[in-house]
Image (cartoon, one colour):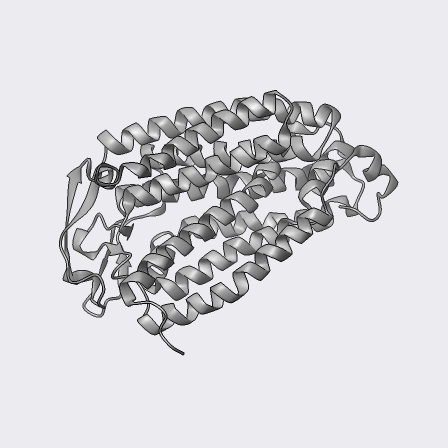
Length: 382
């Protein structure tokens, strides 16, 4: 297969593609997680809870594929990041996995029995399956910004010197709140768009609460990141267009280092503006009863939040607080030139098909989910 791009260009392309996958996961699976988190609170009766479940029931499995695809892309494009992250965040990822177990079982079996205790138990299970991953993903990002305590041995095998409870530091918990509030806001906007009556009104109230929490937490985390924690910067490095060991560069920690990218590229300030502006517009449009437009700007807020972190850290992907020189970057954590090229061709061929199919599915399943429909089709819906 002919090489389409030089090695350096492919490294940047795959940084962008992984970012697209993260944004796709947040936007598509984010409202699923948000709806699950809201389930015990927005819905008051069993029929109302079934409305919420069926608003995401036909599509949640497809949305979950974004998460799986992101993990696969991480393994193929950045194998060193994959190995270091899955060992360092082992218990956190295991917690996410166990929480996600509630989702398929809860969707499929919740309505099989009419016992209120059975159904209530699964409602709280779906809450756990939504809230815990939303929180943990944010905590993980907060720890990436602070640096993860890992290093490499003589054979470039990563080893981790931290523990699970070390991840639950104040800044990590704050970014966890950002993530949780952001995804619950997104889920509430989706509910307002897909439901009607009392459920839609309660969802609009939830948008108001969680949009404000998201914006305040995001701004506070941004100020803390700029002035309260040390960032990382590369002092010396081999040619980024070549293949080299992560230990071949020199990295130092410095106050305000995460703001250097913004100083050198002022256009990147559009990312935090998009996050805050998207959240504000989602709040205003939701209050005006325009759920569809609010959903668009809620998605924009999610994209802006992820881009804000990505731009701040560039070119770092997983900085090391234990041994800064071992920090993994876009340039030294990647697969071979040929591997990146083959994967790019595969993505160029199949991603448009996936997006077209997803668009068709949502077009077919558009419309409101109502209590009347649940009652009429009680044996054929979740």
